[in-house]
Length: 519
Image 1 (spheres, rainbow, N blue to C red):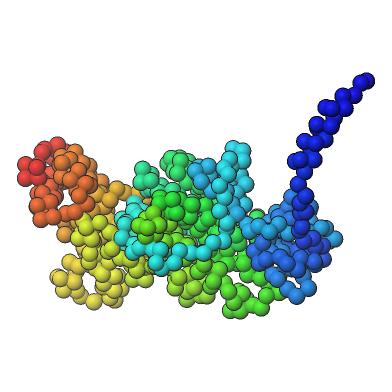
Image 2: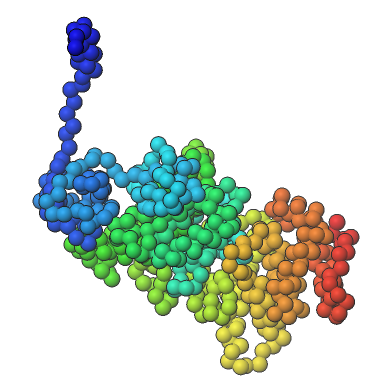
């Protein structure tokens, strides 16, 4: 074989010209001991808190404890594949997750790996899991409503875009249902939704995902799953990962909603990690900084100022109580961090009132600022009326004789309770909520039997939609019920009541008669 020396020389010259002298300097350590999802590593003296480290086989870890002679690392993967003596390398990077439109409609783990069998998330955009919350100057007041579609919440504890509203209650009282309903109601609103399942049974998460798919909500929703069978480190970082994905849209000037289900289990996972790392235990064996773990998470939800794009991130954290103990450590922590709470009471739930919201304890610190003018007008005194009704009801159970005025207030209260009952996965349009609550608070249901309230409401809303569409369209557009609008609504209610009475007396179904006074 004949060699062409000129060709060989040109290739060598090209290779020499492209040669770069660079040294990859990285700290290397060794695993001293490993177990329960954590590893103690010797030799990484320059590692940062929160820095990612690399174990053999591509397993990643997070520097959690920086000690004098070793580093405590939480393993974000299969800890059984990490053994004593393994080499550990620092990466110089902080933990990050994929973000952007590519994550919408996907079911992911807290590291952004797919769990839905649809292949990897194709995006070159990533955000660090831990970031600083927006400062005071970067925020604007919460004024824009985020409708949940649940009458009791939108009327009495309204939620605004950028708010943090806690959902708290015992197990099996409908906490997750409120979060799922709120996500379903965001259809066609442009709000991107994120559901973070922490420590939940895999079967429960699968049911929630099926419901979201059934109602078309997965088109704008991302589910981050760290189930009960997942290691504690992943349960701990899951809420931060979900927030990082949701923040991307907030900083783009869009609106996002995130449901944390639930932070009690994240706190338990954090307690487990801290005790394994030999951090000093505090109240209920939680570490001293468990408040900071939740505050730095929830403070990232905000309504940004116009200079920052006017985006928002609304969060609905869920906390599970034991035997209604709202004054326990984690519940009181999260109550003090959030902008209000919806307390679900087991007694009300088992009595058939769903959502089982205790009006006396539930509150929204944003209040009427996050309501439309029409809703504020019709539901202004509803919360106070229902709270006083509960007191009257307890008094009436003593068996004392009641005067006519007290009995009338009790009767109206019972009907309002019936009116505020709502089926699961049946979010109601804002206009329908206004019409329904108007009828109840103005006494139009006083003559209706309690068992007929739901039917009356359904038929009334159908009547308004069919017979006075112009009025309904105007209310939907202006979101305001002025004097003229109220007169039209009164005329419509009067006509419907007349037809309802006629039907009750045996004259058949409600006639499809136009309401002259309402047009």
